[in-house]
Image (tube, each protein chain N blue to C red):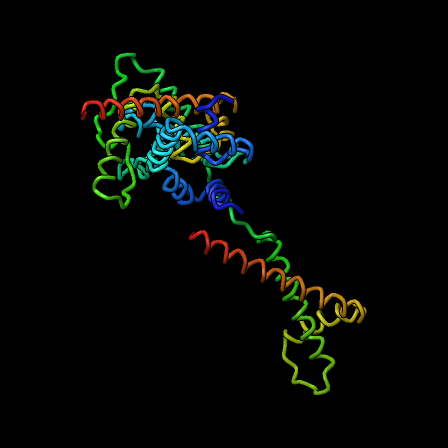
Length: 189
Length: 166
């Protein structure tokens, strides 16, 4: 039996410590989804907490038609989007945290590291400017490694819509990156 | 399919053999196309190297503290109710005593008469004398089987309670 399903069954039998294990396993991913949408750590943490409580309440109705992770991200996504839409229009500020986009350390030469950091900075700035739903969509695809079908379940968009959106978002990011790098080369010349 | 979309598909390794051949032929002759692919690969690498964000250290505790009490542990009960188990054990005790006194009255050695005990013994043995021998032969193994099952049931309950830490 899938480990998640085992933990869910134990939770339903009254073993709360099993739900703690599920929280520990998924908290970073759930928080990443809510943070991408809300772009504010405090608010994103509240939304993530809210998502886990909602999942706990609805645990008995989880029918295993999708993976538990997908079902949980769906709850997190809706919770974050609802909060975002309920916000006053002026408070759409980007989080101050400079490490919003955390990148794994890789063994690069100093020149490669500089190039990588530069790319990361450009991508980060582009993601920050993006519509929160779009930014979260990319996060689900790249960070949570969800398939197009799973993203469709989470967001309620059709699969073809998800594909089109992902293509447009990535291509827009690529074009921004290209423009930025070309400008840098020009300024050096 | 338009060119950028095909290039993205190529970068993700999702092209068919025919599409792959088309892309590779153009890559060999078109430097701009090559540059575009490099940019896609760089962006892919940046996006896939993102790591999930971490909430505060107290996050798990906060979630656990805000959970409502919804799922109570399932009650642990024996298969046979304690009342029926007591009745059964009493019946076994009576049968055992009966068999004992029956054996005493029909044994080879003549024991010394003991007041009251002999009276009870006579009473019980008269009951058991009325029961045909083959019935006793069936009832005794049956009682042994039921007794074994009751003991196993009790042991399983004890184990389950132990597992739940109750």
